[in-house]
Image (cartoon, rainbow, N blue to C red):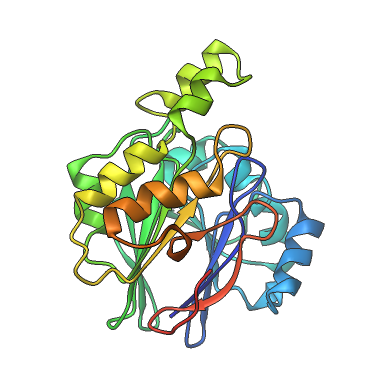
Length: 258
């Protein structure tokens, strides 16, 4: 299994998961031309994408899904709530997904699971090919036992570290936005992500990637240090998915680092 990220943050999110002949895209929050440019950087032809999986209907995750799917006739999979938000427009091949109902693409299985976030029916995803297991969890208001159960026992974890609590508290965001971001249905802070990580089954875990960092209210070194303290690693051993460049292809089970 291989993963790559087009970008991660409030200005756009998109992730690729590949296994044998399967190439899945999770979210697309970039304009069509920018998505094509970022895919080309990763050596990907858009028409080769097997399907687009949507986590939720917020614009930084879904705004580019409709244009990309229509241009290249790609299937789209999303929850009923995200579908009812009507942010994709007309999609020729659309499938409604439900939490804990996996879908198979060859030997690669994608497991959607529900999370607390201020969207209609948000999902996050675990991918398993029978040998490696990769979990993606961003846009999570607070850790829950259910979420921890879903993402435990993974080889690689891509985990939201949206903000540093002190930076959010003293930063330039208006009070209402601070309450939304730091609330029970907003985004995980570095400290919350570290606490979630501390409660996981980490026996198989060999790589952690901090994701969805706020450019306004966080710094990569703060997110890395928070997660590394739980893992007993050096901060630089924790990967970061950036807004501008995401990260290049990583082979799960290989020696690559983001």
